[in-house]
Image (cartoon, rainbow, N blue to C red):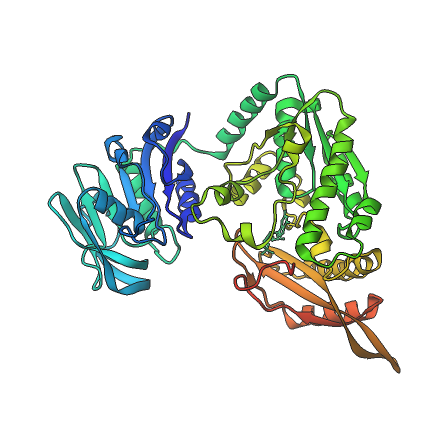
Length: 512
Ligand code: XMP
């Protein structure tokens, strides 16, 4: 059992970042509901607890709380922002609403004798984002940091081994934040740093072997990084008991079905079934304009096709899915992740229940960048490892308006030009996604001496760490120019290309 740090989540937008930072220091951690019981916490090899920030004030009626028994578990506790105020209140300190909110980079003076600030500059910059603050400390508390605005920006209650900091060490705007977290994990919690991805691979392989035994497993393989890594892990664990099913839902990119088939058959020896269900999907999408309805229909049709295919395989007891940690956290968070309510992303949700399979989700404790590293370690072919994310509902959410064979053909051809030209870019930065969107508008153009009245394609190129937020990328003018003129000249039915210059938020990456 690896060393374990628990992060109790009070709803901060930064909670996931705390977890990523802790793991970067080779310590395994999980984000748990804020009211997780001490009994549950004690089931792990618990080395420390972090209380996250959150949007509430500790004296609000509905303010989320934790089990006060956490201070008797004999492990160090670190409270960040709201977590500091809650810890302080539970241990008898005082918290009041600040006269004005403090937000942004602030200079702070820290007491470097507290091991939390070991090797941190005594005057350092930190990221503040809070309304309430601790104004008075009672006996038993010491002040370990202060700013002009916040007399107790860091506190320490030695007797309960509790420290609180009013700022966010997990964000990059706190330059010495990583050092502060490392100080908490190593000298204070006494972690040895036993978490590594190769250890994860070995443990997961053994666990999958034991859970699955001699039964068979089916996996919906999309050709994306997540399901490909699940396939590799299962292949290591159970070999030929795994069958991968790739469903062509008719809304894939140009030549994608054959590309995926070739990538897998060239590189691996999996049982792979490729199902062409284009006609059925397009039939069910005919006449549908509403984005959510498109997603729902694609999700349901996927279930029908998958069900039929899986019925033809003997003795299947398990369905494998590439669920990642952010999906798991979204369903835990006291306030719910934003994307959960904006678009119904998890288009295969409900699948195992309806099929009567047991679920295996070997990646459910990992972040996307960790999955890529595991893929690399398992020898995932580079062309698979470096694929951009592609949404389950595919081009259906990039053909705005009705999805039909004709519109799909136009978008596929335009999209292929975009990919070709961007790949030629020598200084190719880290692009999260680059794609075209077919707009449901026609505009007037002129070709030769002829008036045209044709479609518009929007170009979307973004960078992002995890898809939760994103920035648009400004391509060099010559690339933009080539993409535009090639699309207008080579793709029949398009006479105008526009550039999408919106970030997320307030926009989303996909247009639907
Ligand atoms: P949005 O459009 O919400 O997308 O900013 C964020 C990221 O998620 C991808 N995406 C999906 N992925 N099923 C998926 O598996 C979906 O239904 C879905 N919708 C969006 C999107 O491509 C981007 O990377």
